Image (cartoon, rainbow, N blue to C red; front, side, top):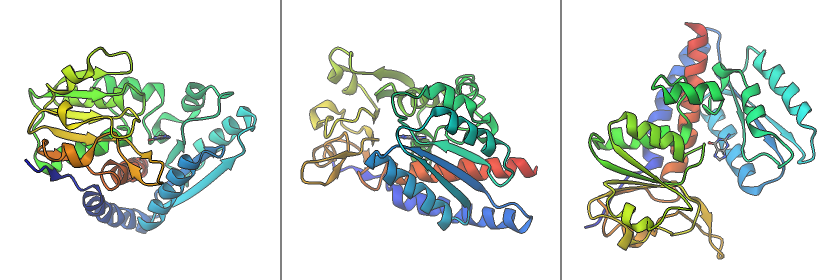
Length: 283
Ligand code: GUN
């Protein structure tokens, strides 16, 4: 079997064209969707992600502001900035790029964001709302993955879904969304015994563990849908995912490539959430 590709660039392009039209309509009524992105420190990957987010805003006709701090900044300075952005009518979405330096209480920073501007969906109130099946904002990466399933007509009802990774950013919200779509969900993590036992049962496998080419063909059920959230840099400088793409493509029915799979969709759903926040403000 040679898997069909879930093309993140193509789906992102399609969605972003619609967002641009909606943003123009909103701007004509006096509201340009606005996103503020806060970056603390000099992590190279975070700098690239933040730059991509700001560029995506410009292309979609959104207003954006990038606020950067040195890694030794006093957390109170960041909290004051968040308070200012909470009150700024030009800003509909606020995102604090994670991870934050060790001297930060990340939960406290996320809780300082006004829940109605929390376009990452990481504020405790929004996490709770998602858990109750009433999400205000769906976290961008799992949201983008759900769009892949919808676009490809993949029905999750009754499917065995296995999520590798239990992070607040991907694993936990992903599991919640799959469960709400009536899949039977297993979450595996670093302490899971016999991981391959679980992955081989998966009709839908989401790999978000941050280990280059960890998922091999032997770990995948023939005909599975394989979603690769990993972005790992190989010694030769090339990017690769958590899945051995070449080998797993021969086993799976559907697969996301890296790059060009989940990555572009994550940024696209950030635009979706920011646009949604701006539209809600005008209703
Ligand atoms: N770091 C890695 N992924 C994300 C994300 O989706 N949002 C934020 N804020 N930080 C991240």
